[in-house]
Length: 378
Image 1: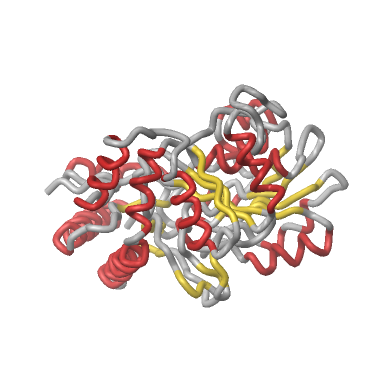
Image 2: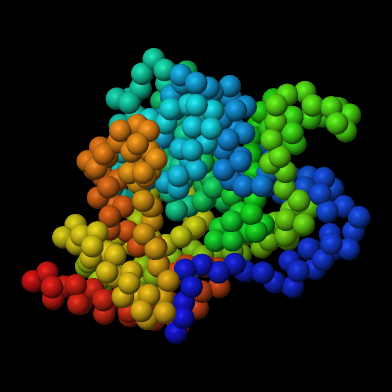
């Protein structure tokens, strides 16, 4: 059996929505963009959505809209996709990493205060694998110290912390719609915010710096081409109509994996905290217990691959990426919890329409591989 790591769910209604745009006279800067933005604002329960071409672009525009720049520092997590730190470097802001909790894989709020300096201007919280960061604590720390909060919700569309939607915390949040996400536009992202000023600035910046009332070739500021097409937004709006069902199906798949792995002592699953009042699963990641090494993990990924199962390490610590080591002098041991987790995590195949047979096969092969490792560790 071949089981992919991820697989998007495209149905006939999605195809018809895209065809409708292709047969229209507006492929870009048309009505499907604001339609998609309004739908995403409703999901996040905020006033504004500003759709762009990627989650990375959304994060960059938020950083820029807050006036962050050279000499400033923003506290964030080293256990994330690299874009959550790169978006700061685009504006010459220094990312200051704080280690994660070993059970949730999210930034540990208890460690934030020790990382603050006079240059600290904000906290960029990442919702790892769909689980919200401890956003109430992070907002409280920010309010007490006059800091801005940016929420990287690129993995948590539809999740809630204490009954409040991801994307609605802090100054602004970002969503992303790569094909492995809960919904997809092929490539795409969105800024969500309650702030009229942030929304207006981001709309201008995504469209080469044009103002809301500008003439066609009049530009008020330096901007970017971060636009997203009506074709992509039509697909996104169609998929949004199924978001509740998608979250439900992914939740069922995650719970089934947990049940299948309950009797496997070598594997730990992500702890979901009680304050998560709605979990929108992005990926399903397991962690090997501490007696296993990164070499064991990598061998298991190869074992699964030989049996037609795609899996990946999730994530490589940002501070150990070659560029960050060269630029900032980071080294192994700087963030030990992140490194310990990252060396042992495996993202198993996970997608909305994964079948029971596929999950059974994945877990059977994983158990077989662990049995081989177990014998070698005696």
